[in-house]
Length: 445
Image (cartoon, rainbow, N blue to C red; front, side, top):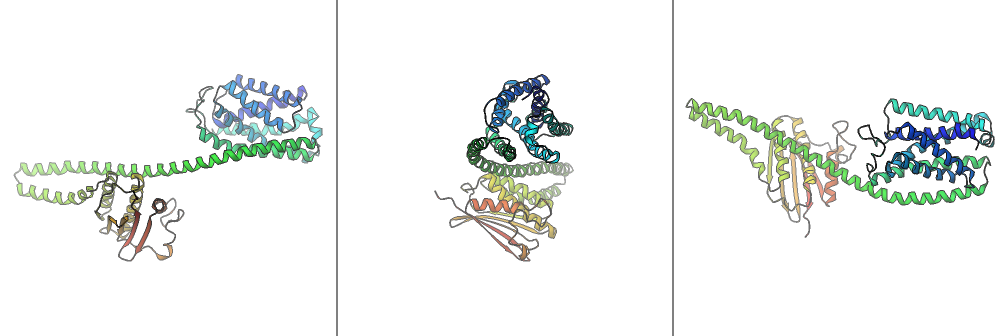
């Protein structure tokens, strides 16, 4: 490698890859550090290419050394540096795999002529440099980042040692490493077709890449397990969000009731002040009847369900519906968690209220919770329009909804939770009433 190639190809190449890497992760890199990284990596590239290391393998070695240099100069954590380097290198390798063969085909030059002619090497490098510069420019202009390792957009060297969780790191590597490997293989395959290097280099490289593929396979097993865990946590988070939403509705209902009580007390006090005792008595009697029905909903031994039912009772009242609840047995030993139970009941009651409200005020929603031999039974009924028979088999599909886009998620969630506990769902629909019956087996001791 000539001095001309070092100054006008190797050094700019490293500078562009480093700048691109840090732009894509939101990390800041001082100009002096960028120059030091460029100079050190250029010297390494020169020494590696002078050695008898096979073509292709030398690229892997340079990647490893590049990561080490970034770690030392920037003082960021290894996980952060590895992902940062892989992002820039993967995009650069992909562009090189695309541009280099295209330029050779268009120009008619042979790869040997380009490699061993410093001037031609510089000319062929120029389009790649322009592409990377444009990529960096637009990423900076539109604040585009593939991964954001910055802290409020103002990360400095040494501040990001532990910001990337190990589990997510494996997922990033699992995505980036195969792409990087494919780009390298593409370049090696292309060079082997031009007979630029001997076949022994190619055979050695294939053996090396085979080891990397084994490593990726092992990494994939752990990543798949982690993805399954994350999916479970996401489901729990969605259920928790639903529960919080129900509690928020309960709080709002309590605040509304408290606000109304102030007016009622003022009215009663005014009637007593003017000695209208009979009118005050009648007013209190009507107020008691108005409040007594929702008060019956509190009579469960499950705090989460009680909170949910209060919120749903308020929702039904707002929509002018008659909401009846009957809980005949204890819910303390039900196998579902509070989040799961509220998710099931909440979605079923919401659907029942929505169906009844579509038909008009004065319709009914009924909830019955009881224990039968060997199971808990939940009956949720509404007097709304019946479910058409032609869609009965589709209502539990995630993508199906008659209410428009981004709807129809409630019933699939209910089905998923019910099946988790080996339960079943029964549906009866008629012009007068639609009934959902959930059967949840009692947990065996």
